[in-house]
Length: 239
Image 1: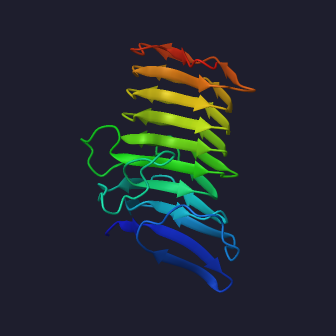
Image 2 (image 1 turned 135 degrees about the vertical axis):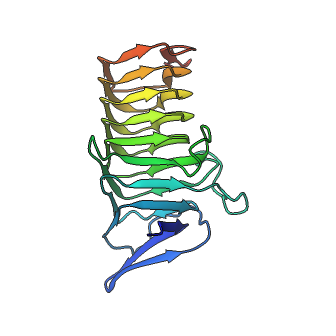
């Protein structure tokens, strides 16, 4: 069976049902009034061949054992590169996402080239998402694997390895619990956030936890920091 291939995806729902429009890279836009709630389910192998946008009223459900594979980016089509986006294809999720695997059937997000390094794909960009849940997932080779912008996020029991940044967020409510961050450039980076970060193993990264500016209402406890080369906890000037 050939894998399901996604090019740049704008999800629009009408009362008659779900229409998936496959198109070239689209700029991030404000919600349209004709978007209606819809559910999209992924399983098996899903190949991402373009920046993929999910509108605010959509819910993406990724089933256990699914592999989400990011193909090499075509520079002519990878138009969303400037921060808060990244070089390389990414998922841009404005709605809800539930990616819950199991211990023996994790959900994997990776590059199509298993030998490629950090930054081979962009990341999962959560833009004002009201509910994003990742559990028993593996994130490898991204620029910023999970990037939260004014979102509500849960990340539990997951692995982050060989990313430039494992979890990155600002102005977000986020739970990061019982994860392994290993061999990333930076494990966790944030500012203007209200995180609960506990019971994680953060080891063999270049930087462990990097708080850049103005944290608020945070709880960071019972984490294990080991052999992070340039520092376990790094504080920016405004902290």
